[in-house]
Amino acid sequence: MVRNFDALIDATRADRDTVTQAVQKALFETPYNKQKQGLINALIKGGAKKDDTPLKKQQIAACLEACRIMNEDEFKKLLQMILPTR
Image 1 (cartoon, helix red, strand yellow):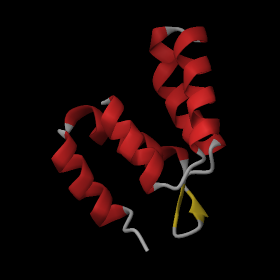
Image 2: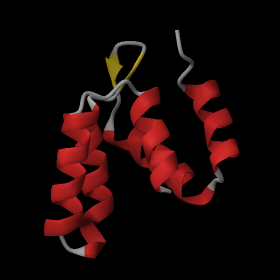
Image 3: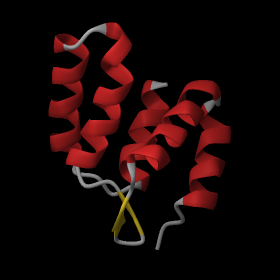
Image 4: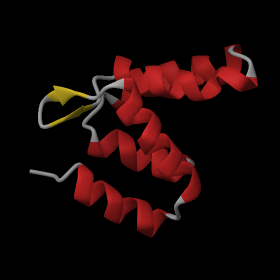
């Protein structure tokens, strides 16, 4: 999941430093049952977007679920379909 999340940061053009700091805080300072929300908030805070439009929480949550269940190759193909690079 970590490598898929890393690919998601790149695909959404989120600010890596901002996301990393927010993820670190979320993973170390929040209860386990709220860590997913911390990952979502980290991407939002980092400016995750598609076609210059900020992603919504529901969109990021769906991507995180795919992060969790897909292997790296499947996830990269999904990202290419839903978040094509310019």
